[in-house]
Length: 368
Image 1 (cartoon, rainbow, N blue to C red):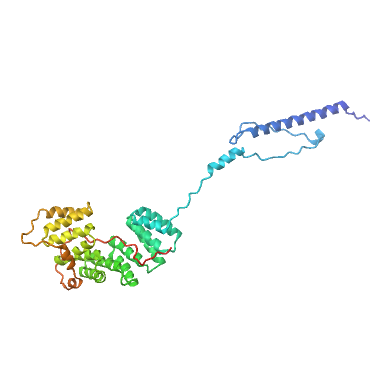
Image 2 (image 1 turned 90 degrees about the horizontal axis):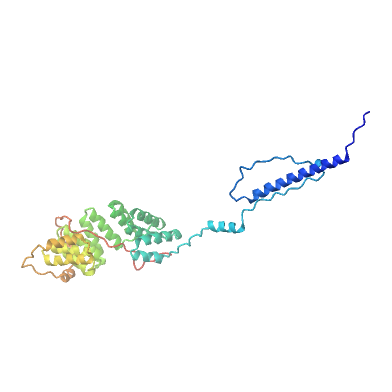
């Protein structure tokens, strides 16, 4: 029996030492690679370094316990850099714009209609149940020239408060301005049902009737107003225009003289008075009325054309001078209603106009 060769103790020690050196080299290489990865920039990715796969010595080879490796997540960056990044993306929200009804209404009365639209839009978002807010938004949009938006705002106001008279009236005005007389009349009739004595609703009804060619019905509407409010200058003006169209020039003259007496600085009143004076042969006084219209509004083209025309006309020598004060005092509603209508004449130098939409009567109080 052959005797087994014993391992030389010196050889055993050498193998153990070689295994230990190999372990140390692998561990050093691992640490070196880890340090390189950790020191790269945040955005640098190592794609070119070769991957070295080394077989780790077993515990039997080393005679040592396997080391425990703790994997820690890489920090996101230097604290100062993190703070800087946070500051870069933080955007401060704009402070909410505070709008009160009074602020928005002031913009409207200052004729800053674009600002009024913006303010009442904010106000109605914050007060969605307030019909007054939508009514004023509609007025502002109408005055700013956006009829479609005005219609929508008035419709919202009427959803909240179906009998809101002013929304009905001004909704009718917007429709009338677009030539939609039948639709406008529906709104005005609803307004008159809600407020039978409304002067504004009756005046708009007169304009609708006038546009539809119902001259005597329109005149009746204006006379109805003047029976209870004899100083309603716009009803006097519009009645005077109807009488011109009907050829009833003297009646037109007294109504328009009274309108001018009440509101002398309204250009169209002066222009229409000039037309009535001219038709009655008072060319000098007519020229003065056209001049007054141009003084009130230098861009009033009709007055400019008419003034040039009458300046070439010669007044009859036996024509008595006209006294506008006497003519205004002589206007009588009852007398006007008794005179028969004459043949209508063409509407050329004059025009039917309406006052700016009233916002509130003295007894109106908007809800907050």
